[in-house]
Amino acid sequence: MQAMVLRKSRERLMAEERDVPAPGPDEVVLRVAACAVCRTDLHVVDGELKRPKLPLVPGHEIVGHVVAKGSRVEKFALGDRVGVPWLGWTCGECDYCRTGRENLCERARFTGYDIDGGYAEVAVADQRYVFPLPPGFDDVAAAPLLCAGLIGHRTLRMAGDPRRIGIYGFGAAAHIVAQIARYEGREVFALTRPGDRAAQDFARGLGAFWAGGSDEMPPEKLDAALIFAPVGALVPAALRAVKPGGVVVCGGIHMSDIPSFPYALLWEERVLRSVANLTRADAEAFLPLAAAAGVRTETVTYPLSAANEALDDLRSGRLQGAAVLVPGAPALSATSAPATSSGR
Image 1 (cartoon, one colour):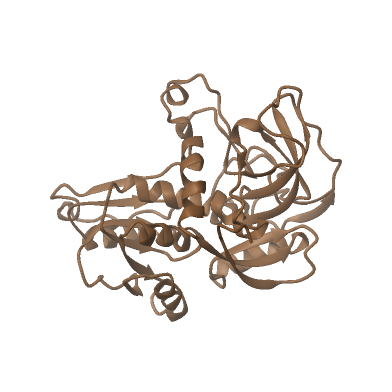
Image 2 (cartoon, rainbow, N blue to C red):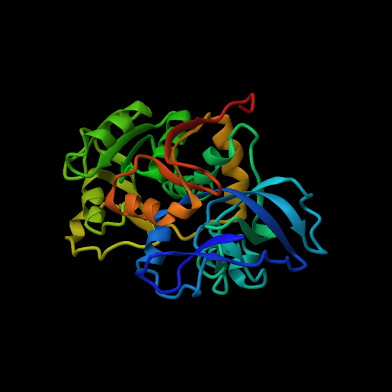
């Protein structure tokens, strides 16, 4: 099988031929149909997350079909279409795992970081962290749901039940969570890179009530702000934008240092919190919701061999929506892939 492999942080991925892996007793082997490219992949490749398994096959937004399974796998049958997210294994024994907070398990292993991921023609995953996918999404459309969608949804839920939501950084996660928020009747205020008119138009097209630069104040005080851009300076900006009692949630796994800010920004019972990883319950709640809400994932497809180009485009901010690697794809193409109840 072909795989794109990171051998050393801050270096380009290398194309390699590898043997097709065999499953362990609790694992499934997947023929990869699509794998979205996440900003976390950039943090791994660029050395901002410090302890990846090396050599490593990145990628943790995997859509694939089961082609082999271990002796204890009963959850899936051969041919099933499934998705694999970032959280790839937990101990199941610690206090966090026993209390529904497996996302904080200290022994957790992560897909495309501790476990080889989906930048390959074949991947292996623990059956506990593999999920059936709604039929209304094709393979490319489904891939961004498995991290951008899941983390966006968890970030929104961590904000409580806000009516007015500010979203800082309007990329893959934001464009999905904005649609969920609108489906739930919330007002969305999009805050993009200053001067990025294309991103602001994109946000308005997804139903944003207002869109502007992150250097601006939204026209109304917010109940909550969700930060997806990995820019620490956005934290005090978001605290300024939320009203007393408001919540600011940092949705990324990595962020530049947060600058000091006056206590007055946090006072009046404002809350600042982060999101770490995801749980199986998140996937079980979000994937049907995405289908019910008619979420449309904006994607740009790349052949597997162009993984470095996809990472470059994400790093430079040239993407609108999500990059998706497709083994065997012949060329780049922009798509907008809808979810429909008819399964198209």
